[in-house]
Amino acid sequence: MSSVRDEGRGKAGDRAGPPAEAMPCARLTARQAIAAVSETYTELTVPEGGGAPAAAPFAPDGPLGWRGYDDMRARAHARTGEHESVVTALATMGGTETVVLSFEFRYLGGSLGERTGDRLEAAYRLARERGLPVVSLIATGGSRMQEGMRALTQLQRVAAQSAHTRAAGLPQIAVLRDPTTGGGWATLGAAADVILALPGAQVGFAGSRVRPADADPYAYSAEGQLASGHIDAVVPPDRLRATLQHWLQLLCGSDELGGGTVEPAPLPYALGVPGLPETGWGAVARAREPRRPRAEAYLRAYFDDREELSGDRCGGVDPGMRCGFGRRDGRTVAFAAQCGTATRPSGFRTAARLIRLADRLGIPVLTLIDTPGAANDAAAERAGAGAAIADTFAALATARVPVTSLLIGEGGSGGALALAAPDRLWATPDSYFSVIAPELAVAILKRDPAQLHDTADQLRIRPQDLLDLGVIRGIAPPA
Picture 1 (spheres, rainbow, N blue to C red):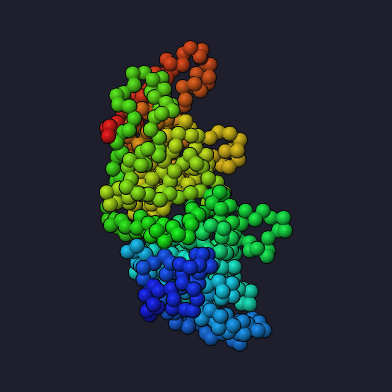
Picture 2: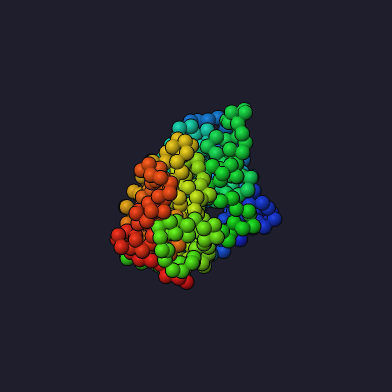
């Protein structure tokens, strides 16, 4: 069990060193990093061994008898005042009580050893006992060589604690400081629900001294990881506190979290032209009108404030898919919104990630459908378009929270249907939904191009047709 003791009530000056506000966030000590993002904090103390059954004092120079290891730790303690590379605490961030894991890089490079694992495990257990989110402020070079495999196996231990916390429905947010490499990135960092990074931070499984000589340094940077879809945002130091607190409010502010009935997200109002189209081709022309309101207009009108996720965690980002969480009338609603472009595999995977996270946290989902269809180029096929679409269908089909879907423009075949909640789909007057684009139907059926308009009518793709067919529940009213 963990116990707590007061540690300066959030003041950064409890150890010698410059005040937090005078230093770049990436260079803060462990306690300064906590103080930089919280109003108050109370440090956790961990019994010897963290309560683990195998807890026992280290033999001289650690489990490997690594010559000089005791002296290294003594020097690290003298330099930092710390007995380990991580400080754990209960902190209040924007009014949300949180368990915080903050690394001290000056202590043996923030490396993970057996006692580090003790502290992390105890903190995770406390988070689950109290139903609290976990925030990791990471600055580590990886596992501690002087403890060999005993150190490396701490990654399994930390990964298990993270997985148990995820299964308990508790949010995990990581802040990647400089550096975040090795097992710290592959467990605490990459496994978090929301991953934020400081500008210029080194981020990657391979540390700077073990990369190929010709490796592109951008791939190992926060900015490179963002571009590759592995983190959600790069946040400047002066905005980190507010951004982190906002995320906690969004992910932890739902009264429905932890059980009970989750109320559906309210249906957005239609923002485009009123009145229904007279013909099928008229519906297509309306939906393809360049000045028609798109996802950004709907999100801006719907939410009081919001934060967005980025990337599919598999190496891809689709700018045509907007996913995140927002507040509307004091409630958190998750959203996945197509922006009118052909949706790429990374977009579908990001949407599936969003839906599953919202489902785990008990947060209702809103999807906005607007795409001519799934991307069908060779690159999309190589990136697994079919599997990505299938995964999005599965995420919607198995979601326990209600999903509200609104067709706001083009509804192009399966690429659009993948984001449509079964039995909870509405449409705006300037939208259409079709099994296939009318032009492609004409080509497949080998019809004369002059029959395009007749084919569009025959497909029955207007909003009123969709209602008659039982495909949608209704037509969204105007604002």
